[in-house]
Amino acid sequence: MATTVEIPDTDETCAYCGSRIFDHDPICVRDCTADCGSPLHFCNYACLSAYITENELTYGDACEWSPK
Image (cartoon, rainbow, N blue to C red):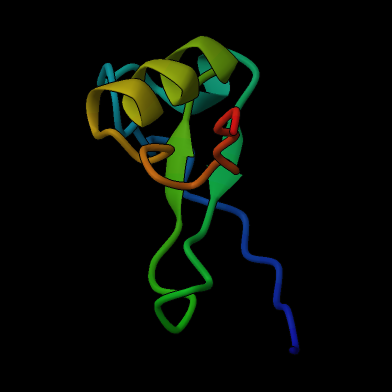
């Protein structure tokens, strides 16, 4: 899979809180299970974590253990 790197605009805002990402420690996330659509930008890991939790993005993705 080829990857290209594009620097977001200086005014790009966080997908979660709306802050300018470059005022913080930005993170770029791309969903490559759906044709690597447009990236989402977050101003920090806390906003990324809150976004994942609120959108239930990890539900059903973990292995399940059941005692017999």
